[in-house]
Image 1 (cartoon, rainbow, N blue to C red):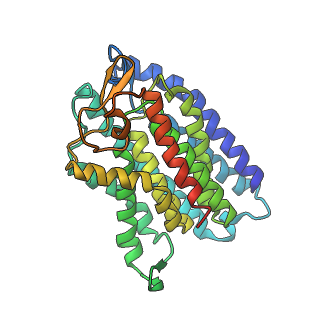
Image 2: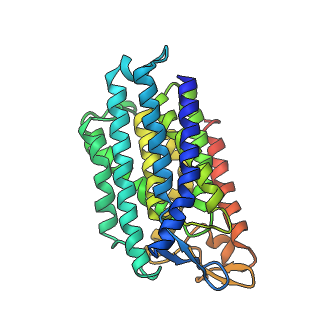
Length: 334
């Protein structure tokens, strides 16, 4: 299985690597561009790079299934337990749905040239919730969960019908809150997908590891075009996809606690945005090579730096990636 996984990961990387420049040209041709607000003169940049990442991830998944079907490995976990194959297809369907929801959001943002926040506040959770349906109907995940002071508790049907949709909805919308800087979402995604993939593989959660490593490969290819100065922006199609990935890795890998810990930066971001009643944005404005916040108080993690007016966009991104790296290491220490 290891060789099949490696080949599939390479395919995820290559498909994204070659799909992204094509997507950039296509999005420019149809004028699906928005201002890059943290640059001088605010150049128009194509949006919705999540489509290229999803193409790479999906291609890798299909190739993996093909090899395990026609040239099965000794482990062949997909067919030793038919449940694994069902989980794989349900998770892939969830990711396709949530990427499409993000793409619709990107279209609305593009039509307003970045002036609109996309879908309305009540529409975002409602539509992202649909991505949980494939996982709910197959009864995904374990029913025994570890709770502080209570130990392991069998939550039964509450897991697929309540905890799964809450997980997908919460993760997708939290990751979506922390975006607006070239390479930030992708850079953080590279860190947590690699760490979770390694953790899942080490502890035998192979489906979770499969999704994490393929996502890492696709993100690595996309990062070439999204790093500062970005040639394409991730858009909500990618931030929703990344949030959905976190939820799926937690659910199919039965590593909810670890995923929750590694998601701490997004939880902090959600609390900060709640402080501003979700009316304050992460983005600021460009002045003399630096990014400045529009607010005096901290309503987002980037505001810790941007409100001082002393840091560049690239430095803000490295700051966010450093925070993510800390929690990616913490999961190995607990």
